[in-house]
Length: 551
RNA sequence: GGCCCCGUAGCUCAGCGGUUAGAGCAGACGACUCAUAAUCGUUUGGUCCUCGGUUCGAAUCCGAGCGGGGCUACCA
Image (cartoon, rainbow, N blue to C red; front, side, top):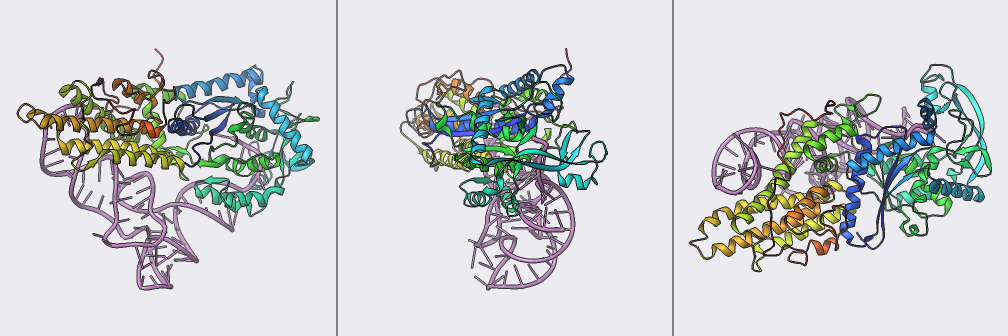
């Protein structure tokens, strides 16, 4: 809010490239997209908004999986990274860049960062001792080892106590500063439950963390996969450390350096520790500014069970495609953005709830309201009517109502409260519906022949309805860019630089676009086209959309 | 074991010391017919998990307990 003049830089995690994309990835990325689109609209043309997502590629399993498929790690990673990019295209994600950690632009930066930390003594060589699972070729944590009575959780074979040389990051040195930064909200961790979680764990003390792996570890590869430790080719940078740097490496160029620090990192709760503790500490070691905030959401559940690949109950890109085919991808985005596990608690994804929300908010709400208004305008006036300067009728002060809705949305966006931000637009739609019932323009239209006052009054009422819906549509745009752009085309009121491209920029900042009677308002006499319903009503009795059998 | 979060209408949740506890959805009744059998209004519905305590006053603060979830460091 007060940072309007600063660049807005928002990130999602970079996704583990060995896996297939699913609803969880889509959720985080859609929310980031909604926030990014809102910021672009808020700031208007020339907006400094940068939205980053990407893939995390240097895991050992990428090497072994690639080998089992007869591919090089780079080929395998490339194939899967493309699957993520395709998934995000389907979801209408408007990221400004897509970082892959196997790209040279990233690896070169990581090497430089590590070198700098070696020079400063923040990274040092030491001994790592832990419980090693020979079958899995990996270390298990002390806790996990104890719980499994020092046997492999996978094979049941006894674990070996092993010691190896490793490079460590001096995390312990940053404990006090980190605690202070989080406590004072200079590094804002949201929601509060997660902030407490981090602070609670910080009081237990921090140990230095290993940041390297011996090159021989993991699947035995020909060429080392990842970034080698500067000056010590026997070691590689541990994949997690490598991955975290993406947020910085991508913008650490002459053209983009001013974007740092990031405004918001969005993550799911599983990777809280890395982002709330290790990442900011590493940035301090590098002498870089910390991101402004970290938002940690919970999980989407499928019914009672946690969504996971092993349970096979995660929503796939194909299933999402089936939803999009029937309801439009915008409706799917709306559901994610308004019903998702924002906050600390998990949320359910169910078909029944999807239909309920779709019908209530979109078909019966936004879609129907635009239809009835478009229809009456077309039927009674043929083009946008002239309100003749009237702004208030029947106790509805529209400039005030729309202004308040915009403020409410802007305020919610500042708090990263995405659902409230969008509901501000929907509440305007509801207000229009109520206004129509109170003022009964359709009844007024019947007296237009006999009553000389009826015509002007009808014109004013319908203009208010249409103009209020236009403002509402701006607030709904971040979640539903294509449907809203469609409405703007029908009403000849697109604020986009290219009305046919929902991703093109905005010609002015939101405050100007949303101004009642301003330069971008509906103009009397301009064409208003009704068109087909924006959202066809869904039949709850219809079975859930699924992947259609081939053919 | 330790720490944290949650437990409020049938459902999803807001409220986090102060008048008769709210919203959306679902239900019932009524109104209306411009619209996608849509919309609008009214309304039903709650021991605010339990038991204690603090207070003039608690869903809201404190203690204990019950139920659900999370974290406990290198595991997307």
